Length: 57
Image (cartoon, rainbow, N blue to C red):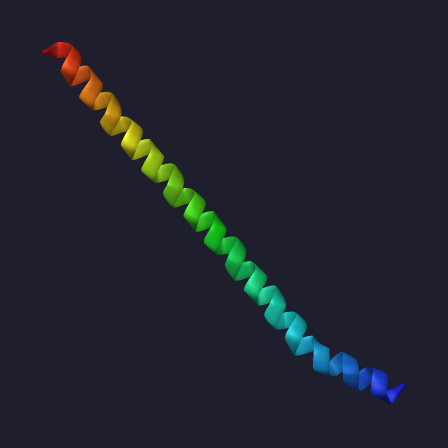
């Protein structure tokens, strides 16, 4: 019984690190997605402004 408790106690920090790493990965994915959306929005806005200026001339 005591050896089982020791094994569980040793695993707890590892599990906590894994959870923390998973949170960091999820935050990184969310930030990358937000940047991607911003880039596509800006680039489509620039493309549209070039098209309308070409139509005027």
